[in-house]
Length: 520
Image (tube, rainbow, N blue to C red; front, side, top):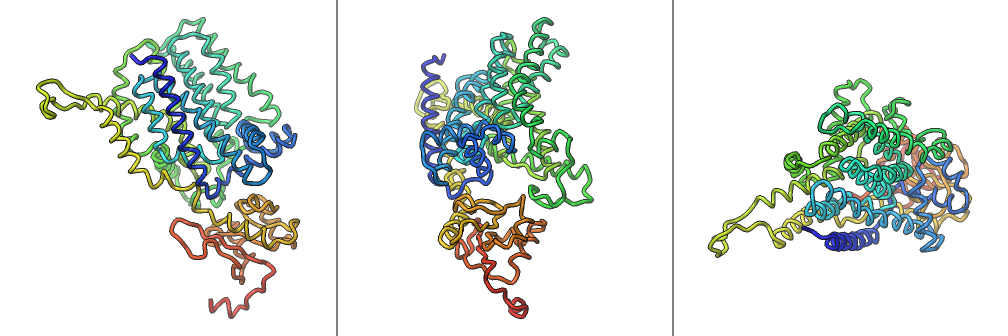
């Protein structure tokens, strides 16, 4: 039997390895993810003393920006790179701490071997490292979500009400990180609603009513001030589309992965959404772990224990709601990435790790094969090391890939602006906002591009091929804006596979004649 000291030692070792890995990845950041611009901007407004205004005026929930503020006040500095490092430090810190609840969840469900194996496999998934080392809110959200999931599982097993207050607190914190946090109390309420229907999951009625009351009222009390301040559960358009309070995004909306066919049937929409969710799960978990997951599920059903049916009912609700939510996200918004599938992926990681552990426990070789007279030998440390090396080698090119290397040209474009922009009050058009951030210059992005195209103060336009040749409305606006001009700079100078070539256009440059344009 594994002792508490052994568990603690394993968690500390796993956290140390994760910290080293994420720190190394963050040092190889070519450019942070575009969403980080919003998070850092909100953190800067909070840091300036405008907490209420920063919360009310941003579409993002405040937990991660508040962590950025804390990290920034610790490391100091005022440059864009200082704020980027603060954002990454906040994300990495939460990502390292996630190991604690992730270990506890797998330990609760599947035992000691699956616990450390789940944590190790999680960081062999490229998506995990690339999200946790970036300026993104997922690690902060998953930290609170995972602790809340673990305490909820303990309540469902033991029926002890002492587990409900921390569940409520962590659910509230998860919601303050991302709106998906509401799934935790929602799934627990749904589970409590289904429990009386099954004999194996029932609680006595007084305890059942008390649990429902706590789970319904508790989170409402925690999130009520934020909801009142914002005037709703969330101002994110995706949430409104998921809840059905807003219509699906237009066919040529910026967020769509590809334009929507106006004649597309509901069946085709559902089919495409299902395929997108499977691809997202593959990115969030990787194919080998998905293969081991069914083995883990079959083995888990054979584990008989008091409270186990209630736990599996709860996990089933989360998994089903998560999959349906992801499908609706794609059906209404036209996108679904591995980032969005990390909640469901966390469950699949634990199940897949358990499946691998059970499979390896059943695989043995006769002693005579290795010179022993009798007995059988199961997988030892050398075999496990070989498995990890194999998985890591298979994923290695993506695991060690610099963060967002395909858009590193925007950093060079920002350096160009700093060198050539004599008057910082003149705005720059860059629909991504990256060159604005790294240069410190103001400008126009997606949301106010139309205004920017008519602003006579604009001189520089930063674009890439996809922005000039795409089917979306803003692409036509940008193409008309730079028509007849040659870029004054390109980064990189020559096209490279997987690297977006970023162009700098000078609107004060002479427009080529029609005959010259035809010849080109």
